[in-house]
Image (cartoon, rainbow over all chains, first blue to last red; front, side, top):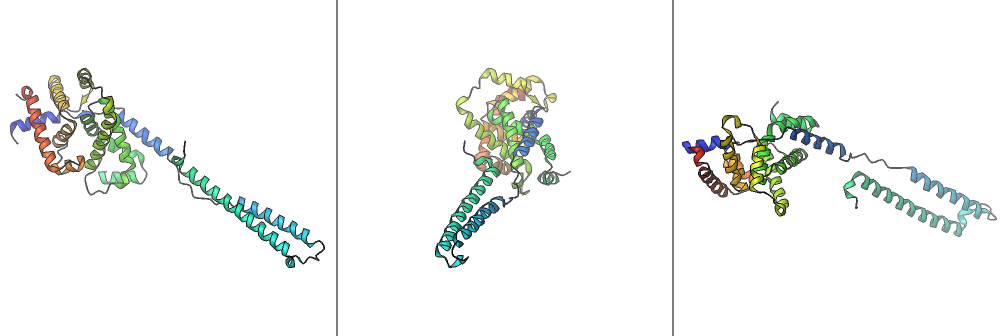
Length: 120
Length: 179
């Protein structure tokens, strides 16, 4: 390395700038804040509340139907086509409600676990 | 504690250990950022953003290269992105430049007098951002051309040309100081 090159090296070496003393505090504060604000991925808890609610209403209506259709039919409800048709349609309707409700819960959980997906 | 151990410590969740990396690299990161954007406040913001990015992406560091090279690449890219965003509001004037110099502290300024110090800062300031960064990495950090290639993503031949130009320009600008 010639003298001129050495001189340039020495001069450039002396030009290393010193960061502000508060910069480290700013950096660490930002990191700590972002850590605290980042969403914590919670373990998914499947809510059984809705299941029992819908099944409860479903069975209550079926029981009510049984009593309704057994009047005058000597309790032979399963031989009644109208009873079976009503039960099947009720089953289909409540299953559909249950499906919609679960899908809605799934969407809600997904949005809560990832707030950045929110559309303003 | 070795740097590798320190990084592993941070990855296990010890956020405060990152402070040691900040201590070790903040001056050089600030210098690189300043060389590119030529503004003290912006350089501080760039340095801060680069450290936060490094922290968030530390899990992607593979220990196959030096941490310093990996980190300086983040600083350099953050600075480039920043100046692209600021291009339209560039208010750098001669007056502000001199004011900036007097505000800046150098880690090694005690070894040379104030006039020399300002002359060096002014000379480096007159270089284009990429040349100023290359010369800083080459002389202060003693990075090889290969390592500078990784940091700046410029080709080897391009770095050699820019280094040659920067040296020549510095020699011209510092002619009196070098005598």
